[in-house]
Each structure stands twice: as C-alpha cells, then as structure tokens.
Image (tube, rainbow, N blue to C red; front, side):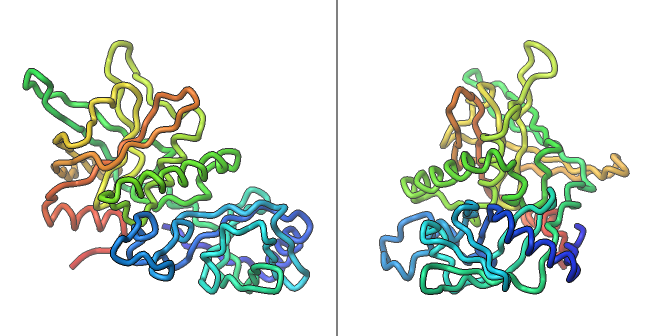
Length: 324
C-alpha cells in the first residue's frame, strides 16, 4: 500500500485559499475508533447513561455541507450551529476529508468549541488520500453452496469486482459525490435496523461503506454472462469475520438461520499454480436493500468455526502483517 504524501507549504497555502474561496463540503470521521463500536449501534440496557454510549455518528462518516462552513484566514474552519451531527466529535481527534481539483485530501485535528458553535483548526500537515492500494497481489474467487429441497448440492460462484477492491479498508471517499446523500441516509437506516436486532454485532462497521456504495451507485447490478445461467454473486467485502455478497433474485436463497458452505480460493496473480483454499461454514448476519426500483440486495455473512490457520491467513492478507 502506497504511503500518503504530505503537501508542501506552498501546496498547503493553495489548498487553504481554495477552502476560503469555495467553502467545499467536508467529510468528518472519528480518527481513533472506539474499541467496541457496536455499542454505538445497540442500546445497552445494562448501562443506558449517555456518557457510556458511543453515538452512531462517532463510527460512521458525517458529511458537512458547504453552507455550514466558514473558513477564516488563519486556517480555522467554523461550523455553524446547523452542523449538529458532529457534536459527538467535540474534544476528540477527527479526520477531515475533502477534494481539491479531484484529488482527495485529509488532515487530522481536534474538534473544538467556540462561542457560536464548533471549530476545526487546519494543522500544518495536509496529506493526500491513499489511492494506490486498489491492486491486490492475489486473485480471489469464492463458491457458496447449499442443499436444495431434494438434498442436492447447489453451488453459485461469487466473483470480486475491480470497483470494490478486496482486502483494502473501504473509505467514504470511494463513494461518488452525487451518491453520498443517499449513502448517508442508508447508513442511518441500517443503524436503526441494528438497534432493532440487538444480537447483530457489526464490528467497526466499515463493511457498510461497501454496502451503501453498491446500493446507491448506478449500473451496480450483477448480470449473467450467458442467458439462462444463474449469474454469479458479487463479492463486495471480505475480512477475517465476514464476507459481503450482492445479487438480485438469484441470491434470494440466502436465508437467516440456514447453513451454507463457502469455499474461498486465493491465487498469486503472478503464479496461478500457487493456490490457498479456505473452506468455512457461513450464516446470514444481515440483509441490506434499497428500493427505488432496484432488486439488488447485499448479504453480510459471518464465518462460523473457522480454523485457526485459515483465520491467521485471512488476517495477514487483510492487514499485510505477518503473524508469527
């Protein structure tokens, strides 16, 4: 993964001038995620005090419109009172992202308070968002299988997409700007779903970024290459706990409480003879859908009783860190 590069002093001044003149929209996320972010999504009946609950907005990205921002000459960004969605960030380190000439930039700072609202001080260090990590040295394929009513094995291929690179942490900046309003609405809807289903632990929730991106972007449907054949499911996300699949009517067989088998294959792109296969049982965690005439849904499936050596292998592929 390529390291982000820091802007020079001259580039930083140009960016500050751009922010002052154009008041571009910003995206704000908590830089240091809570250890148990699911606490932000599920009501804790044992401890319902406000100070012991992490709000959902502390986990998911918050978009701030340009009309809610005023940038001072000193490099201080004032957030008007209408930007109430970022109140949970007060006093915490945040990551602020925006675009300058189609280049994604970010900086890390602390959310502060002033007499009329909240403020962000732009630090000396502004960096480019990492974008070179879309290439993966491993080719990935998967097959999900189950038994039909006659007891026969049914297998459906699952294929990744170049638009949704695997083993790379999804970021809000990958979502098209014109889709972000709908994407944010979906995230909020899914937070409510999880509250209604307290048994569902969503981890740090980053897989939901791939979900809302898929459901809000155009031409994201999975299509069959040959007529009358069951089209493959699309793989949107994989980590060491779950896989997220997407599909239309052909994916309706994935039901809660039913057992499924998953075979994941990893092959070196430079040498396809080197292959690693992981077999694991999966269960449906959640189904995500977005109406507006679209039949596609996303299916988050949890791994069940994965072997330790397979779990280690997956973790190394995702983190890039070799486990001793």
